[in-house]
Image (cartoon, rainbow, N blue to C red; front, side, top):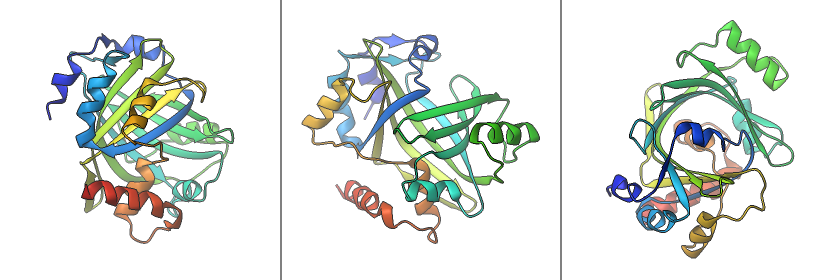
Length: 248
């Protein structure tokens, strides 16, 4: 599939324009489907969305290094459906050369709040400045160690009313020490809006194709793939979905 041949039909927006819809405090909804469905979705989206272009590229590369405690407190918070849960990561936006230390909070109202500080590069070590920042944002001091790397490609769309941002992630690869894996056959799409009741062309198209919203965490699902000892009872439904999509 030549993705760029589909993306060339879209009008494009710059990074500065996308920043106006960056939605650091947002409602989000994810959809997971087989990559074979992507071409049809892109064909139906181009009249309602613009695509982000950075230095002539519409497909961006992301590099992420997650951090957690030794006993994986952040993973378990998500597994146990705890509200006000966090995830911590370094993320490099390769196309723009930007790198951030990021904290994602899912609060008790279902909103995702992302806080970040700009850094020079991804590091396996949290400096004193990094640790102080995390303590300030999270509200307590936590000893964190590096976990897995996750790499993926992303296409970012903004609807023409500038009320919604849609990200489409694919070519997901991950590794930790000597273990690695991938979700090459999957697409993870996410709608990001200020409110949950905003109408969405993507949601309508997904519904037509019987692609339903599902909660999906790259960090949690790759943790299960890389560490057979972690607790994952509440993620069994997600694992069944992954296995089903892989077999289609």
